[in-house]
Image (cartoon, rainbow, N blue to C red):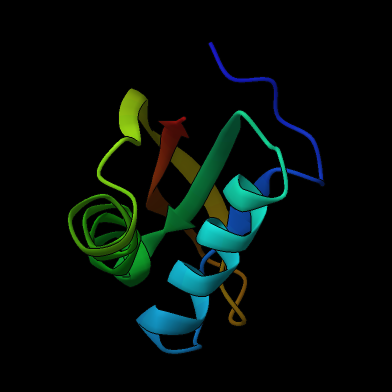
Length: 93
């Protein structure tokens, strides 16, 4: 099980995929044993791409050690409640 901290967690947003891949590779090369890629909603596919590009192109020794999925209840700008899917992918060196 991954220990989440601000040091080893990548929050996926609107940047391009390779920016996040570079961040993951940098963390792993600086000595982190695990990196957690966190995403929600439409960016879930991007999180999967980040993990797979990191493993297949740059660091084949890195393995997926854990995947957690869930749902968060969010409030929209209009005040309505909606459910948003979440994913956490843990990569281990």
